[in-house]
Structures are given as C-alpha cells and as structure tokens.
Image (tube, rainbow, N blue to C red; front, side, top):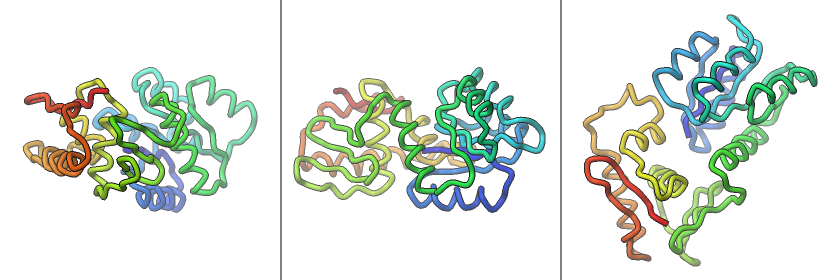
Length: 224
C-alpha cells in the first residue's frame, strides 16, 4: 500500500517509514501542506498519515482539501494535539482515525490495517476466492491446507485483484499500487505481466483459473 506521511518531525517520520516499510508498505514523507498537495496531485496514495501542526498551515485545513479533492484516500491524524475539540473537528472533516502522540508503531500498524479493511468493506482478516484464502496480516495464501509460496509482489498483486474483484484493474493501477511513485518507473516495462504470469503458474497448480481474466491491452480481472 502507498502511504504519504505528512510530518515535519524528521526523527518520528523516519521511524514510521522504517516500520511501515518493514511490513511491506511504500512510504513518502512530506513536511508541509504545499509539498503534500503537490505530491498527491502527481501520484495516487491509498492512505495519508497527517500531523496537524505543520509549518505552513493547520493540518485540518489540509484535511478539508483532501476530502474534497481526493476522497478515496484514507486519512489517519497523528498529532500531539489530543484535545477533544481537535479530535471532534478531525472526525467531522472526514478523518478515518485519530492517534495521539506518543504512540506505539505496532498500534499505528493495527489502525492502518483497520482503516484499510473499512475502506474495502470487509471485516475479517482473511479474503476468500475460489478455494484460495488470503491471510492479510500474515501475508500468506493457502488453498485448503496447502500453503502457497508467493513473493511479496505476487501476494500484493493477488490481494489487490481480489479486493477489486469483478472489476478490471489496469496495469497502471497495479503499478501504482505496487511501486508508488509512477513517475520514477519505466512505463514500457513488462514487470507487471511477469509478476502476474508467475502468480498464475503457482495458483494453477491447485485450481483451474478460468476466473482469472486478462483484458487485452488493458489489465486483469478476477471474477467471483
């Protein structure tokens, strides 16, 4: 998942990036409202971690813009301002969660996972499709009792396609989901096709994949 961290405290921002990167997320740090708006205008993000005390403005004002222009992005407010009025204002403006500093990184990880589950409309820690189960927090895939050895990228591709089942997911969308900053990538590369091909080979060992569709010149779709 692609996460933008809006935090002007360098040490805390680096600690968050180190932790979230270790569990498979792609992160970028921005330290002001202006930098953040420029970044999210160029590249899509699944989630924003938003500090309220920014050098060029109030994070709540930034939250207003995010909810108006980028409503599909999840937002968790992380701030030392833990007063009730601030929390109420944050939720009223569309924050998905609110975490007061100092906090444990493991708690942040759990809250991120909870927000993502709500965004995608499911409540369990496991997705199921055609006999396969995807264990979201453990990054594991099984068919019945058989564990399937997927790479991290293959897991992310499968998970993203299942989360968007019955809809065509373009190669560009997969690229954005897996690598984050699409401006830094070679648009002519076939790495998405390679990962999908390898994923299919591993899944086909257990199940016929007539529900795993290639949409010519567009992308892929998993049909329920």
